[in-house]
Image (cartoon, rainbow over all chains, first blue to last red; front, side, top):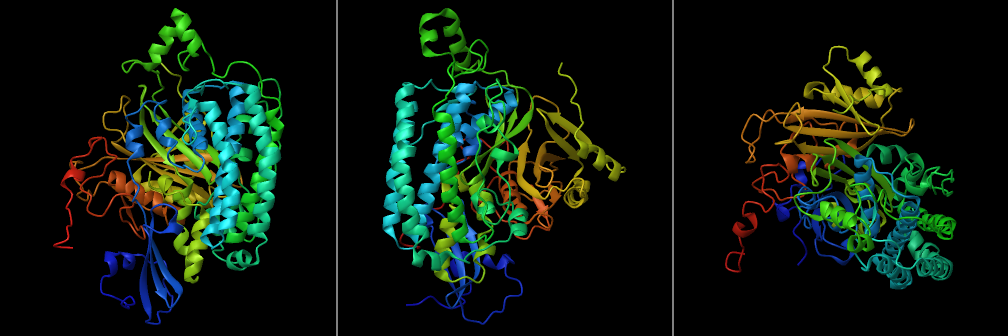
Length: 429
Length: 185
């Protein structure tokens, strides 16, 4: 039986209270379709209530929160190192980027300058995370639009990135690798790390990119289904707070790696006058779904060039900053062999000790695969943050979906959803 | 004793000159400047910050709610809402902060007339969901918001969970939540 047209209170939605579609002509043939929360194309758990006029979307009301698990409340009860295990689970397509961003924000508040070696490795890992995220996003977009081959070709090389995460942290999926002022440990085997990364970016990835481009971007069906769909203008993109590839596909010239440089994207990152890594920020003008994937694929190439610049000249020296200060954990060799190391270790580990944080608040943001990921950290002098507010790019980008979908056909919903690369764990936190 | 912050961000002077009658304060920490305004002045200050071409904060990055109940340092109010602004033309980041004090007990979900702010969704439409999140988590409501509903928790959730007087493990909502079984489904 088909859905009842204009039921009195369909699925208890409050769509009527939203005024996204003022002035749209109502032909009286509207019906309501519930999309999600469980649907293969929502990737995780989110729900769209679509009010359809025939097959055209007249109004779309997103409902989120199905995966809300109080991450920010937990952030007030875990210390600055422990909380990395939680942020890692936000954007699980590129978990290590969350780790790096979280400790970037904490180090901004603590005013810790990390070592050049740590900066270089963090930059490499951040770029690998970007590749990881974009590969899945572009591949899954093909999958959503009915082409499974592209997905498989994009998914295979991601496995190599997991292997690299496994090497440096001991965990494939959620590395939880960073710590305040450094990382959980130094690279266990630098030669192996270099070899794995170079093998990946010189052999596996170019092949996958070539396949992906011809399978997805040069695919006539994909092209027809994405060009001109979900377009948003530059002005709207800025006004709606869009960031990342979605904004850059609309012509917004903004990339935090260039505009608020951090890590190796800033000049003089090694303290000896090293230049910032050079790369281009791809911009498209069309602002539609196709442009977003073009930008993403081009960003993968730029990430490869950044890694190429760094991989052969990772500075030597310690991974953790100020090993004699009270901020970073000492290496295990010192903990086990010297009394100072042991004391410092316990100063940070014991629950009644820990950091002497400033009583102040600050914001640190990184350009991650989805856009500006930031943490607003309110510190209260104790080893636990008073309040941790995430600026989740998925959440901010997703609020535009109603405006993007206005007047589009029902099959375009999936295309637009995929192009925003919504990660519901980050959306709901 | 920490040194008092140097308020040399140019926006401070511009806003002071423009709003001579308003009560404005400023703080600075690690190079990040925050302007503290009174709730009543918020909307006109925000509109000025976006429209004036010396400020040109055309991008609202985020809206942040904070509960300072029991915070070690004195604050001008219990709740704060922080607006994280960016200027693309000038490549600058600036924070605007408002403090609010509740007039009712904060362990429930009653509408508190003291916890109201003017919505900035008419200036930056992108404030819509961040403001809904602040409402959901802290119970701070926004006047003239197009669609002020809870966003992460459900409609009948009996608390605003990020308030400091709400316990980490909740007040038993999961255990006591109504179960729908086959007989009444």
